[in-house]
Image 1 (cartoon, protein in one colour):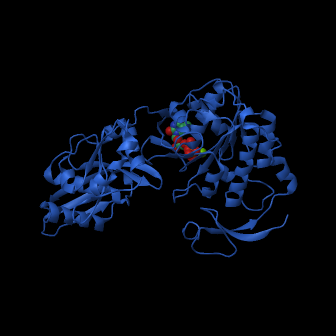
Image 2 (cartoon, helix red, strand yellow; image 1 turned 120 degrees about the vertical axis):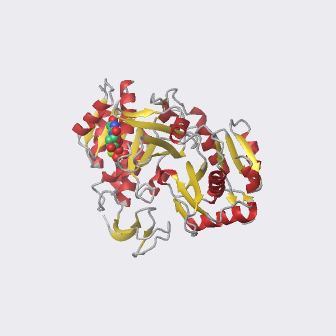
Length: 453
Ligand code: TYD
Ligand code: MG
């Protein structure tokens, strides 16, 4: 095997012959790491090739039972109506969020239905996993196999021997292919192991779950490269100190990417939350002014956040603008707009803004919600409880259109909101929302929006 040294970005997989401080592919700093270039020996490659002859498309038989329902409604829905045989699903998320638990629960459900499941655990011992499974209060795991292994070749042998319907690989970052020189977790290892597993899954009609840890940048470590290989990408996320978890897909070859699944982590594993809007209803004060909800975009994902404003009389003649999770300069600018264009009396007031849950909002679409929160607190008027507000605010208090309006509205609707106040310029979206249950109200200026207080 011939080897050559290369520098590979651990976030997006971009390669460079020399070290660079900033990755030209994804613009992240300090992500290039030295790896050895590799090429797999031909005898390994040959084993991975499909041996099927071309057939007529009309002759391709689709077995009736292609989709396996996991009996966990939220998972089935996010997957697009069940788990496809021969599909590869990447399950990403922060460490400790519950990825292993989720996959274990899916595995237990399928094994209860009599399917063979193989759980490859590279991180926790067999005993630890058994203890975890016991907590889940599921019995009849007669077709649930578990093994502690990180060597990919050995894992492939087990797959051959057991012939499972579902394979769970926990996690891809600890797996390694002995033919490659780089260390486990490096982009080459992660990519190559995932590619080999994917080919096996496709060839044998196995449903494969690959667990991957997310880096703090919010991407699955290394594995932006993985997203191209797999069929479905599921992210499991949640607040550190909250027991609620959200499962969402950013890619799905077998269904829509609009679905989310909501779970609660309990002492007996993950429980489905079938009415997620309750989470918001329970935490949000019902009759308090200054609380507004806005669907912001996090990358390609919509996300509902609550913005709270508090306006109080300044004590020493010096006004303070303080903000948590929102740019404080932008806050001052919006306050000036409220003062000058709407005549609100904010000159001698301290203004505090808080984005609940420690989220950082950069999205200009949150402007309107910020303005509403401040006005609501100043005027002691409550913002309609089931409404969300969207729009960028300009210096003449006009409301400007925002991007990706559709996923935002869908998210609000999914989480039980009934009214969406959006910029008039975005209203053409109406046609695409014909049978939506959410009411869309277009507004041109901040003044019009304030009429909704
Ligand atoms: P885990 O699935 O190990 O997370 P990941 O694989 O994403 O790293 O979840 C770990 C957390 O979940 C851990 O802090 C304990 C908690 N947990 C429960 O609260 N209840 C349970 O029944 C289980 C199995 C885990
Ligand atoms: Mg785990």
